[in-house]
Image (cartoon, rainbow, N blue to C red; front, side):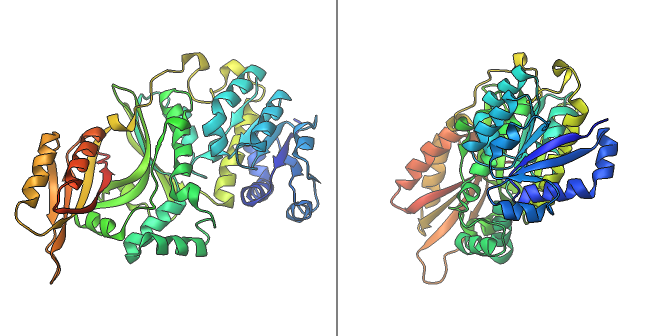
Length: 436
């Protein structure tokens, strides 16, 4: 059978990894796909660098439209990033009847509904395994491997940069700013790390997984997003003393009132496997009604791990390209006419447990005042630490873990606690998930 011709848009870290792995493992990949898959065109603004990376073996251009419009190209790999020109090129490739593979989580999270609709109408496939958790095949697992299950919830460490920073803060007792600089020096964080440390990257990935898990449209604009920039080494240390670790989690749950869709720092019991995922690694824990809990772990970024996912998508498309479009696996797992309109819950309505730390005057009656406010808000206390003040100090920390309650109850109680004359500054609030 004639080989599948692929056009590559962008030959940066992931693009060069894809080119190298596809060439290195071409015989095994062809044996699995049923025919050869070869990259025959590359578009990149730096033509000379692209020629060096491809050893001058293929056509290199600086205009991506030449690839997207080329009649011989069967599949377009989009590795440009962003939601501007990338969206234009993907939609153009679809209009030209070409299948698309992308690692662009921002594009899928923000415009996936439009892109999948266009692909369905044209009868082509848009594959995006590499957009979530790098080399971990979590999209495949959710969309196909767990298809018999009613997914109840999933929770993921889906940003390696923030996980590395939090691991450094815990292991070395570093403050956030110092740990971030270390991550940048070692290449784990970009010079502008905003998307990572503010939780935006994780929210893009979570939005995609939630859509597949629950059969809802992608709705990134409704996700609650909170990063790690305000975390203090003090809280990481107190969490450890209480038997917990703090991770930036993406969490989505099916509830009676709607779908929870949230990214934020979270206390997890140290006995959970996912709590022990360290460094730049990723992990996703999924609970299905039939299978129970399954954990997916591996490298969430990097040239060859992400290339592994890109090439897996190329093989899938090669196998399915000749199949009747109506018999292919749907982009978001559920048939387009069976997608649900289940609402995304406002953050105030979510229910979880909480870690609360307050800096208070070391005097009689403070604890009684705080517990009374919590009780009035129907918040019960699960565990507590009351630190002895250092010598010469007149203030100390009180740390409380609550049982499950609604976010709006905690917010109302915190406002009243912060108004007490014996409480200094703001109350630190971190959500807690048992994941058991």
